Amino acid sequence: MGSKQSSRRRFLKGGAALAGLAIGGIPRAIAQVPRVEKADAPPGDSRAYGHRSRFDTSKRLDDTHAPHGMTTPIQDTTGIITPNGLHFVMDHDHMERPDIDPKQHRLLIHGQVDRPLSFTLEELKTLPSVSKIYFIECNGNSQPPRGPGKDSVQDVHGRISCSEWTGVPLALLLREAGLKAGATWLVAEGADAKRYAMGIPLTKGMEDVLVAYGQNGEPVRPEQGYPLRLIIPGFEGNISIKWLRRIKVVDQLYVPRHQATNAELMPNGKALWFNFQIGAKSVITRPSGGQKLPGPGFYEITGLAWSGGGAVHRVEVSTDGGKSWKDAELQQPVLPMAWTRFRSPWTWNGQEAVLQSRCTDERGEVQPTLAQLREVWGINSDFYFQDHFNGIQPWKVTPDGVVHNALLLS
Ligand SMILES: Nc1nc2c(c(=O)[nH]1)N[C@H]1C(S)=C(S)[C@@H](COP(=O)(O)O)O[C@H]1N2
Ligand SMILES: [Mo]
Image (cartoon, rainbow, N blue to C red; front, side, top):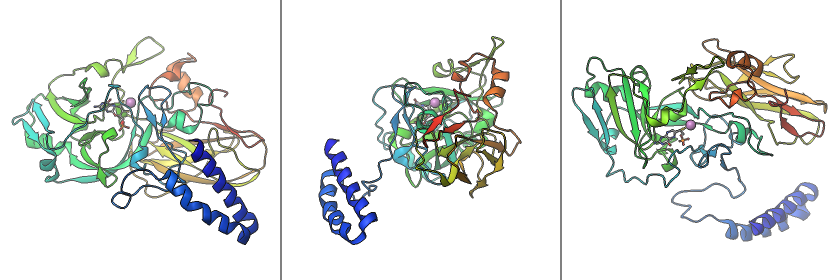
């Protein structure tokens, strides 16, 4: 680490000379490059499977809420696709994750069906497939930071990623198995040691759920469920079962162990169960918490918007704490249940400013403020430790250029 830092510093010095003195700096910088490369080169045959530039230091961070979770550096991603090595991770078993040989693995579909079916990965790959871009968001995303200095957009909102997933529509497999009259729910189970399982409404299973084996052009990563996982578009990530080994078609609601703690307490003391769909949501990723603007002048505000209810219809940006709003530009493609990248030009005058974004989805659902959420969920100051928090995220830029998380201050 120390040597990496000092070599980086040496190189930065070379870079500064390049910018300031042009010719004089060039030989120094070039001379240093091979030495640094040797010391920092990651292991493996990079001709057979390439690796990124050693200057790209973007990385997942330990999740402050979940002991074995990792967050996606959403402040660093460009466009709408999360690189596979930076996909957030949320595992419940807290042990070794399954190391599955696809030749040994089977997917079983059974229960209330005419013909129980068992598939190898190769058999699934012979069936008609689709590729779709969808986000996966943990139901616990966007909870308030835990610990000092943990208020970056990655720490608060990094339990979400967006990928192109390839696989077989679950509806095709269920039709092949033949649903018996009275079938209403599915129970999907992973190959984790503790058999992580979740109940999924059959209507959703017949709509758009994927049994995925591909992630951004390569096999699903082990962290994401190699060799097979469910992708349940627009629904909370916890039911998108990884290391998928079994789907049982059932005729009544079962509540598997991991799902039993998932109900959200309402102010009236009742609990909301099976609140699957992610609401209309957005966040500015640049500038965002912990970043520093070098000085007044032009900036492009950019961020991500999404909704479990369909496509993003509109994103507005405010730079004056919500007094006025301006439509942001939505980058194509704008796809249902996928990230939508938005952009808005801004000239910072050096004064304190509060930046925020507001998403409206194709159903007309508007991302709520913290105050509006409180009206529904009560005035318990802890209320947004609730799952599914989709309140507007304000970032405060102070005159020194530092960006702070203003959600707790508002
Ligand atoms: N088998 C299995 N599937 C699982 C989990 C798990 O622990 N085991 N975690 C769930 C949770 S809580 C989330 S948010 C998503 C996270 O997917 P990722 O780790 O690929 O980002 O996977 C879900 N599927
Ligand atoms: Mo999750």
